[in-house]
Length: 239
Length: 239
DNA sequence: AAGTGGTCTAGACCACGGC
DNA sequence: CCGTGGTCTAGACCACTTC
Image (cartoon, rainbow over all chains, first blue to last red; front, side, top):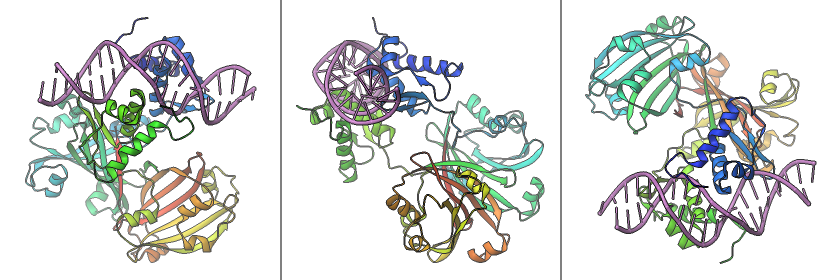
């Protein structure tokens, strides 16, 4: 039986086969997955290869392995700590996401923000302020900062058309990797309160995000103010 | 060369050897780690075993592997999303942590909390309310709930002596795995404000934590109210 | 006892990186 | 080119779970 060094690795083919059966509903959470030895026979690979396929699936949270018992389909995971765009967030809740651009401008006196993006203190920055709406209710006020030099082609019209995330991904070829968030609470000032339709002094969840690309570059800084009656943050932390 | 099936697995011994060299400063971030083949020779194991040692270290973020180049010590990580006790938190900032027990009682009418701990609605719960102080300044108000049945031996005196976390770990043999947090903002009510030394209506960061043991059991429910001028939450989220 | 995952061997060839 | 990590073989024994 020949190997196929140039094609898809065998262990990935085995994974795909298992994932297909899960997706199609043939395998449900808790069901036993073929054992290492069975997979080795079925796919004509050695035990180590079948084993590797299962080990990676376990690391990815798709299956659970119990010594002496077997390998089982893992219960579907709630995704904590995932970097998801606003548009994706709302869609997953079955709500219509929309956002209103309040301002789009170039600033060059935001030293604090520039520093967070590892730019010169006087760097020109695009400042995009948006009101986020879910189910037609104001929900959050987000102010994004990006390098004006790097994203020179970005216009108010383009961000009004589509999600900022997808524009950066598709038009600028940026892949997002992770964000570092600083979260605290603050009280709404007069203008924020008016925009969000709440009383001045109401508590807000404030996030200061630095969003990094896969190249490790700090790409976007976002200051978010969330109505605490409409928004909670879910976090899973590990020991 | 005999194997040692009953002792520490070979791949773990190899890991320890590498980690020791990192801890002692013999290996610094960016330094090359012995290659798979070198490790195999040094520790008299097969290539697969040496490889497994490095693969696990990579998954844990201790080293980076680059095909064709080698294995390198990873830069020290900032630990985001780590489950850390209050005492540990303060110690890591070089501050003296202390906490004052405000009340220690048994309640049985907290249906919401009981549900979160997967207990009967009328279950008897230990309710422990503590004021957290850092550098002698009030900082947070935390209310913990635990099963009164499971932790029957727990007394006010014991939690006044030491960290709740370490009591549960050492005296009850519980290992903590992760927490699910719900975070939002709220305004301080009169009594909370007085305890925290702030004005009524000031914004607070509110967390509702369910802390799980390694056995997957919801063990503690914690309601936390943090002065937002003294506390921010750091989160790293991934794509 | 039978079957499972966990560890391990002693090799092999491939694809990639840096010189 | 040589050394690196990535994939893979065809077995082996151990520790554990389930029956």
